Image (cartoon, rainbow, N blue to C red; front, side, top):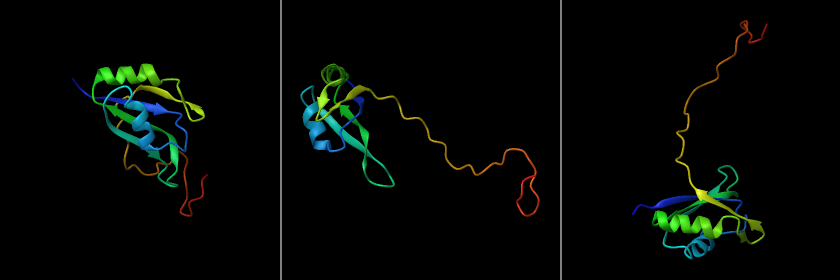
Length: 106
């Protein structure tokens, strides 16, 4: 029995991780809840992740809560896709053209 990670979207900005944990615990054991914040402002971005203890609990949660009203919004719940590797580094690469010593493009 393996855990299942769920993506939860369209979460009201007033919602808390505890409220999500309480809601999803109706479908089974919740291992972890993470609401995503904007790095610059610290404000919630309206989505997060809920990790259910088993695939069975995860599927039950999707069935129970996808499209369900939470506060004033209809939330989206589905299986989270694996996180893509982020590109790191890489500097500015000019596209074609020629520039003189002053940096003017010709």
